[in-house]
Image (cartoon, rainbow, N blue to C red; front, side, top):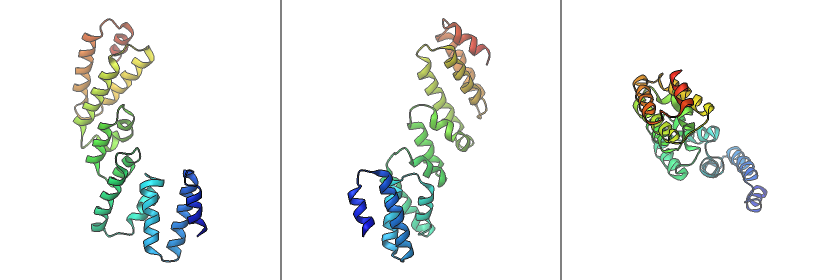
Length: 191
């Protein structure tokens, strides 16, 4: 009762909410109140602490493999395209969904994070994402350090199947488009 009251009182304090729900979850588990236990886990997984693998796996353990597929899809629907759903896609080995997520996110941070898991199955898609993001950045002049970073990324791309050809294409295009950027040309020549 006290924990439920605390949930209402501290509704705008996320760290407290997680703590209260976690304690409630454990209490319901100990008292064999299965429905309330599942509800607390559901709240933690979908709202209060999304992306937490411990809670996610604990919820998963309550269902059969067949049941879990439906529950998992409901979790994904509840989370939408939140910043933590990628962790769950990877956990569930849903690499097609993970790839979609990585491609939709602007920038390269998620691509860096999941490149190892995705590069064997989706090399062309990853190379296209790299190419798109690098070409967006290359539109604007930058300092030498940024050009060096781009070259490091290009080197990274060569380790993906078909990457050498993709990098060669990018470099050829950049040498035509940005030939007046001396520092950029010097860094590309070091590739």
